[in-house]
Image (cartoon, rainbow, N blue to C red; front, top):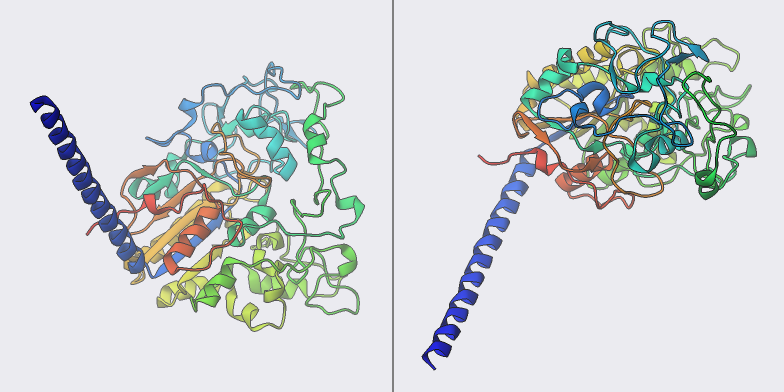
Length: 500
């Protein structure tokens, strides 16, 4: 009898203890949530700097404490049929690149090692980086078909010792996210869209010439005509700018100037010639829409915007001196300007004039401490780090200088800076992307969180993708959530320390 009473007392005490622990934990969780809320409210400015086309391993694969190249268990590349390539060959213009050995070992290699194949001050070739290619390269998470599904072959396995980069130093001081993935498979066009709307643009009436000719499930079953060896030359791949059901997944030009399509002869110079099949004006809700709905100030700043706008509005037969001109001091890329695809920001609208700004206005706003509450900055082509038409060091210095200007300004004490890349540029990375949806996420890319509130000297392993930026902005300003933002993607809060 006494034993039974004793057992009942023990059980009662245990339940009481568990209840007390639960109350304490709930109280702690509530206190932490309130602390995070107060910390978020102290952030008055969010600046997103969007560079170009580098995978995480390509630039930060040797970063101390990060999940880098030394952790790659099996980096061996295989051909279309899954057979390991006997060696790697770097291709340039359909021929072996004489700057590299004809037969490189089948593993990641230093571009700036000994010997030096490409220092960071010299551009590499631009590597194919398209929607369907990226999925085939990832190969179910094995990441072993990057060399086979590339017009540059073994170049995709090249990486740098990024410790000489200025942004590497910022990463050492603040937070580097080593589990951050590009929002969508493929290239710049689609990933810029996912940065601002977490959506894939629609083009239901796209001509057959632009469409992928196979159903996506059929593509997955497809076998090449013959195995691809390291020396057989770059193969031809399944491709298409528009999916069979009418979504634009690779570079498609804007309906408004500046566009890669000139205006029609005798037509409105502000518009791209509709006969040349630009992307139709889009109606999806963007992060700009949700910011404006809450009265939050914001702008998209683009290096060379004003010059490109004048360039694009010339007669169709005029020579363009800025748009896609690698010899210019700007080299403006129209498909890097996502808001220019949306009808809400069409020429003549007040929203366009207010929110689509030149890069010089961004730098002036930093100098005057008049940045809007949310600022997106797209560097001009000459300093965006894109392979093929610029080098890494120029863009790295430019971005680091921008970060330093903000840090030296009165804005710094209440600002968060997010520096990331639109996509991997076709370069290999060893980490499998998380399971997502039809559109992504794609390959891992670098992302830095720089702020007085960011954790210091920290590597953040939390799973993120490009939509995490939308999620963070949405949480800070209590915005309407965008439907395409992935529930599985973190909101960047793990990168911060809001304790006093």
